[in-house]
Length: 275
Image 1 (cartoon, rainbow, N blue to C red):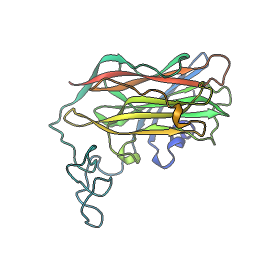
Image 2: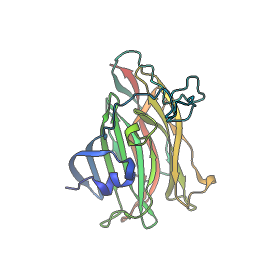
Image 3: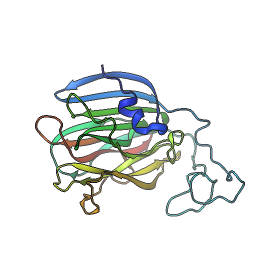
Image 4: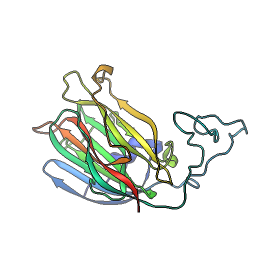
């Protein structure tokens, strides 16, 4: 039994942590540790309530946290209530695999490629010494923002990753965890390589917000990188098709004894359709 707690997930987020509610068992598959836990987002007031005006009753702008302003472009003001278009619920169907950003190796999937209800919203990575050997992926139910699942791959060896090291965050957190909005899912990925092009040193994700009417609205991409990621070593963006979100993250690792280096990432995607 390996418990996903402060070391493997909440510690990465620090003050933006999701609350851990239930921890499931783990399976050891060769050198892969693949753990899954159900999380419940910390409740901090009603989810989805938009602020109509700023704290000082000032006129709102397109920035987050100062009230609702209509007509913002190219991205909407997420302080505004979404156009729910009724109380429809959604499911995921179909299948599409993106190309690989980075370089091939030994493939390890994190997530559930055939899930009918959960999409990826976070990819985190950590290292042992200089080896990017740990990745965790979080998914969320498309109909309930409080139902999260975490998967992890630890190929760092017996000592695992360096707990004092920098964790890369490529994620779209819920509002109550410090994010821009609920129900923002990954639909594209890009990695940055080291000088030898054999270790991932940066991760970027693009995302879409699933509105209550089923529309997928693009949000600004997020990225994180280490010192050995130079601007000219960002690899290709690999994206889901229009109308899709990622349900699984396909990781590529170097061969041999641990620690094994992350060398590339691709996505498995599914369509968002009404039930």
